[in-house]
Image: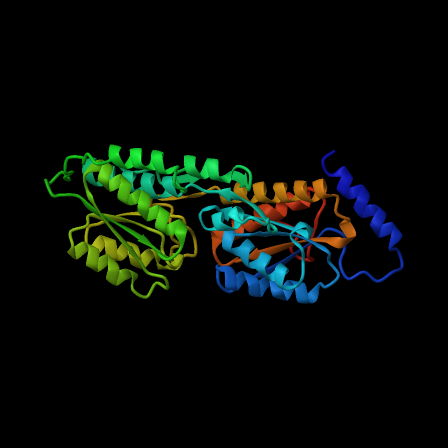
Length: 363
């Protein structure tokens, strides 16, 4: 029954347009791969979609992250689309708060908030216990997100620790965290020191992960080394560096998942334990390295949440199906990114949207 409204409306448009040339079917889904997973990369991809599809009056936008949707929204604005004629929902949460706080609403209406607290604190804590007690983490841990909008994002983000609480509450928290844990040592009596290595240290998501890793270190009495390498050219050198500083292991979001075998070889050289986060290592056979502990997101399910929310928003606004399309800003070379956007496409198709030829099956 959920699909009936869309199917009836789309069918009526097709009947009415019989014999007329139509550039797009009603409720089309158009995708474009972005070259970079940031706002400029997404803006370029959306510009290409808009240039080729000038007749669409209403756009729904999804992508692998908040930046992908923010770039598309900036493109839509530059092409003259008003905020209430389009709707985009991101994934991540940390980098979109200024957009949701704007006095005048934009077409960016919400995000699926993923917790950097779990990805930063819990991964570090599991690695710490592995080094200290020999308790190996689960091989795979998947987290889910929370759909938030302009009305509730501050409350939920504060609960998740990715937005500061009110000044009085924040001050009380700082006062309560001054007591330091006793120094932690490994089984050989050596002070524990761990690394937390990220691929884009300038992005808020990774800054938050490292913030929570630092909190974990303070709570448990060990030292944390926070470093980053954006393009992967220095990551092996960084591992050498933290090993020389006495680190017994590290959590890493690798700049390039295909560097997994080289990273593991370097870690083995220094007898270091490794926990991958966000992006799973890919082995020389092209398959995920399932033997390395990993925390990621339930990417397909999160994508479906985005797609379902966009379809519901479109129906709520009563947009004409013949004037409405969905734009997917994709980055298919990264498996977790593809799973997110495939999930969104799958949910949109379940609501009556139509994928481009050859792209009708989400994987």
